[in-house]
Length: 257
Image: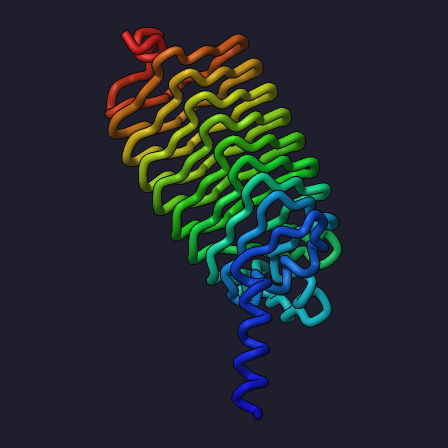
């Protein structure tokens, strides 16, 4: 009887962990499943509330004391172990893998061991993946980001896909490291696109990408296959100290000639 009950519980749990087709999902449910290390898949759903993948809610009332001599870090990290997949979902509020608490001075980050997929999604709030370390594939293709998309200092260790993304506010990839190829083809940047100090180690595709505000490539390094076909910049572009396979960035490169 106990064995049957356990199998039944596991089966019911798997229905929630593997896939969810519900029209409306509470963000707290997602937070709990993700932090428990489960694989999650949500399709055609509206997510209500803040998706907070950081350890802030669990750790905010139990913070380690700070050392006057700087022995203790003011950063608290948590690794999300399972794969995360959202397809054609709408996020009504913020999606956070980074949060800085002004009151305590602590910063809370989430890293990702599995794949992270937000395909054809709409983000009505901010997306914050600052400092996140992505060990698996990252896919935000076809999504709309209505507020700031913050990937500053993020590290991408596998293929990452930002093709056909509509960035309606600032897109911040400053200091980001792309250790494998990355695709930004066909994306639209309505506000500043900041790639200052970012590094592309194994190729980047900016073909058919449009920038309607400042494109900041200052100190950016691109290596491997760099595709800039039909690359359009309708405002200022800062390419001071930019390198493409060890060469200075030029207008000819930008025009793919």
